[in-house]
Image 1 (cartoon, helix red, strand yellow):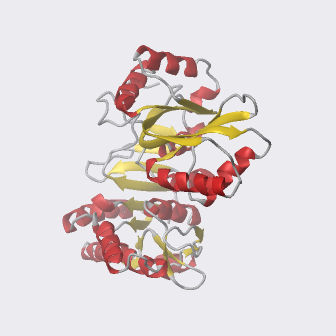
Image 2 (cartoon, one colour; image 1 turned 135 degrees about the vertical axis):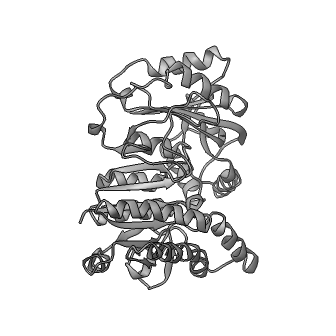
Image 3 (cartoon, one colour; image 1 turned 30 degrees about the vertical axis):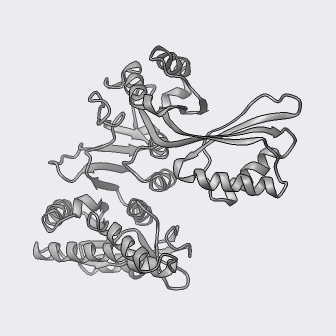
Length: 412
C-alpha cells in the first residue's frame, strides 16, 4: 500500500480531545488505503516544562541525560495516539526513536539524522499494522544513547521518514492553515498560498517565518518530498493547506511570493579594522568559534589602510560576539578601534523565484521603503531574495508597505 506521513505539532495534540481529533484524521487516510506513519510532538508546553526541570535540577547538565528527559514528552504522545487509534479499531502501535531505529549523530540536543532503515516498520505493515505512531524529535546515537534533534525537530523527523519510506506526501498539521504571503497578524491582506516552491519556503523559513523548521525544508528539497502544511483545527479537503513542492509543479506565481521579517536582529560594526589580506577570515573565524551565527556582512571602502566591517547576528548572541572580538583583539589576531552594537534593528526580506527572471524588484523595494521614510542600514541579496536591516520601530510598517507594493494579496 502507498505510505503517507502525517505530523502533528504540540498544539494539535495538546489535550486528549485534540489527540482524538487528530486520530480521526489519521483514520480517514487509512480508509483511503494508505499505510500511515504518524509523527507526533510532545503535548503543547510539555517540552518547556521538562527543560525547566532539567535546568532546576542541574544547571550544568549532562547533555545525554537532558536528551533522556526531554525526549519523554513525545513518548507519552505516541503512546496516547496509538491507544486512541486502537480504540477506533485501527491497528496501530507506538515507536520510540531507538525502536525504528532513527540513527543520528552523537551531538546531544542538536543531533542530525543519518539513517532511518525502513525494515522494522515495513515488516509490521506486512503483518497488518496500518499506523506506526513515531515519537518525533528523537533518535539513537552510535553509542546507543537517546538523542534529540533540537527545537522543531519533529518536522525534520517527518520529512526524513517520508524520504526513507518513499511516501506519497508528508502532511504537517499545525495551528495555522497554510503558508501565507506574510504574517496575518501584521496585515489582514496576507493571503494563503496554494503552492510554494522548496526554495522560497527555505528562504522564508530561514528569514523568520515560523511555519516550518529550516532543516525540514532542506531535507524535503534534497529528497523531493512533497510537503503539505495544514491546520488541525479546520475541515480538510484534498486541496486544503499549502503544498510545498518543486518549482516545476507551479504553473504561475508572483514575482515575489512573500515578505518575511525577524525582529531579533543586531547590527555589529567593527570600526577602523586593519585592511589586509585575511582580515575577514580572522574576524569571522573568531565569531564562528565563539558560536555566533552571522548573517549579513558589509565592508566599507578602505581609507589609509583601515576599513569598517559590519555584520548582523541574533540579539541573543551580541554578548558572544563582543567576547569573541575582544579575545581576538587581545590575542593580536585582529586590530580595531571599537565595536558598536545596535540592538534596535529588524530584518525585512522579500522572497520569490520570479526574481530570477524579472528586473526591478530591488528598485521597487527600495522606492517603497523610501516613500515611507524608512532608512536602510544594510542590504544583502541572493538569487531569490533581498533583505534589509532597518530600525525596528518601522518593521511592521515596512512589511505592510512591501506587501501592498508587490500586490501580494492578489494571486498570480
